[in-house]
Image (cartoon, rainbow, N blue to C red):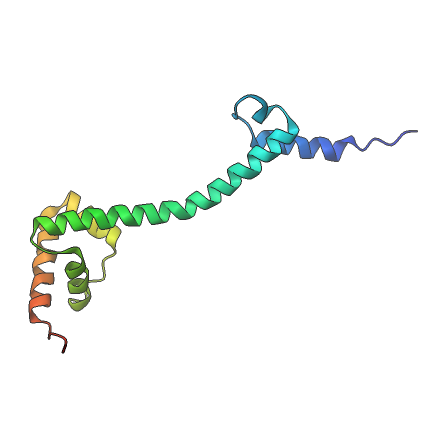
Length: 124
């Protein structure tokens, strides 16, 4: 009786083709191309999960910078003032406040301005 080794390889192939579901043309039909496409796609996915974090942080900083400019304050001064005033809000929540409830953000800016004006100046 002949031994068939098809079960494991069929399962492996099936896994590859499932991962390539929805890909265009040979990228979901041909095993070699499927493997290349899936490996590449997973590499991009990993890279872009990291990049997404950077992109959102940049967005929050741009939003905060614009909101601070409207209130006569530079972004760097604003962040420094937050530290002086012991306000421990992150950039995400601050940018959401600047958009959703500007009156609360105005209060934070006034507290920051006061903290910056009362701070001892560094000796030069």
